[in-house]
Image 1 (cartoon, rainbow over the protein chains, first blue to last red):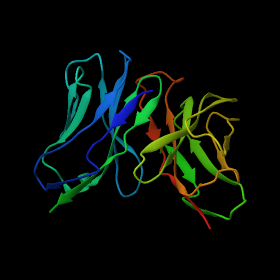
Image 2 (cartoon, one colour; image 1 turned 60 degrees about the vertical axis):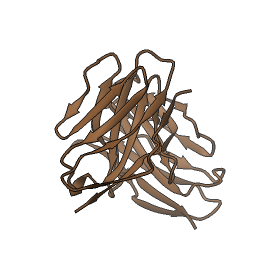
Image 3 (spheres, rainbow over the protein chains, first blue to last red; image 1 turned 90 degrees about the vertical axis):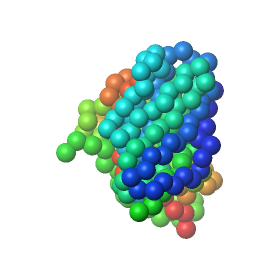
Amino acid sequence: AQTVTQSQPEMSVQEAETVTLSCTYDTSESDYYLFWYKQPPSRQMILVIRQEAYKQQNATENRFSVNFQKAAKSFSLKISDSQLGDAAMYFCAFDGNQFYFGTGTSLTVIP
Amino acid sequence: DGGITQSPKYLFRKEGQNVTLSCEQNLNHDAMYWYRQDPGQGLRLIYYSQIVNDFQKGDIAEGYSVSREKKESFPLTVTSAQKNPTAFYLCASSIGVREIGNTIYFGEGSWLTVV
C-alpha cells in the first residue's frame, strides 16, 4: 500500500516570508500524480497544485511551487511571500490507483 | 454555480440511530467519493462510486452504506453499527471514471456528532 508522510504537524511563517512544507511518499508505482490541498478554517479542501510523476519540471502556481524529487520520493511545497490567507491545514496526496492523503501540516502565518 | 453541496452542515445523532448525509454535485462528474476526517489522521476513504448503481468499499467502510441511483447524488448512511461516528465527513467528485491524475474536488463537509 502507498503511504504519504508529512513529518511537520505544525509550521509557522512570518507574513511575506517563504515557508516549505515537507512530504514524502512510498510507492512501487511508476505512473502517479501528487497533489497539495489546502484546508482553511472553513474546512473545504481546495486544490493548490498538481504534479505528474513523469514530468521532471516542478509545478508552479503563482506563489506556490513544489520541489519534486522522484528518486527520493519527496514532494515539498514552497509558499513564497506568505499571506494571512495562507493560514490553513495543508495535505499532501498521492494518486496511483487510489488517492492517499498525508496527515496534514497546520500552517500559521504571523502578521 | 457548479459545485458539490453537502447537507446538513451539522448533524447530531443519538446512539443507535442511523443518519444519512446528503451529497449532490452539478459538475457532471462520473466519480464520487466519501471521506472521513479525524484529527491527526488526514482523510480516509469510506466508499467511492465510478458510475451509477455501482460503488466500492474504501478503507473504512464498516458501519457505513451508500447508494448511487443518480449521477448527481451519492448519499452516505452512517448506521448504528459504526462504533465511533463522530467526525467530519467530506464528499468529493472527479471528472471521469476513476483513473489516475483526475483532480478530486470537495464539498464543504458535514460535521456529525453522537450525543
